[in-house]
Length: 271
Image 1 (cartoon, helix red, strand yellow):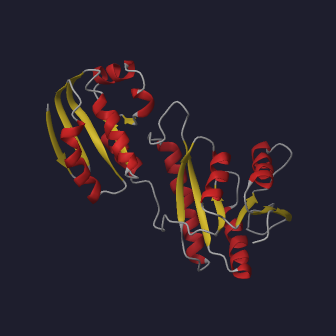
Image 2 (cartoon, rainbow, N blue to C red):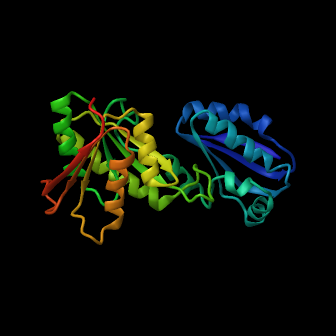
Image 3 (cartoon, one colour):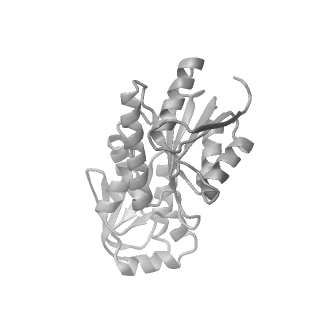
């Protein structure tokens, strides 16, 4: 087997008959220093792979993700994908993309803001069914009144049968769009821009977990005009009121111009 590297990619060619990660690891870690968001393994020139050879990918995922980055195995020939799919545990742990371009786009998902949300912040979730501008205006008011920083969080939901690092082009594009919108509003309001992208199995559970981990002081939900049929929005609000580890501010936005038609209730410990 031949291994060579270029830019953010480790390329493999030939026959992968044994675990080659010990050989590849040093070069991969050098690439990771240059591309801390993650790297690719391009297997487009692989002729064959054995079950033992598939351990290369499993060990690569383990080491790269333990370093806080992502790795995507891409461009695999159909015959190689068939072998990997037959090895227990491999398909569920390896993020495989059909093309190098799609894999690279997945790794580059992000925004122009800081991705570090300060602890003790007022959090605005950037999710469907919420009015981002109204939420940011309410968060800005709470920030001024209580002296807390403001942060945003966007989510990419990953099916449970796939690894969390698996590329999800549509969901990632949507998260990028929400993040770009949040960034524009934050800059317009004169707020420091901090947006975290979280890859989760369930958005609501992921939001509760994020609020807990970041010791959030408040979460702001500006719902875009819920009606009795908007079950997802109402369930989101109900879950936050019951489970969020912080103050909760819920507002219903009826006219889409960022003004709150009715402020709901705020619950949570005083901070």
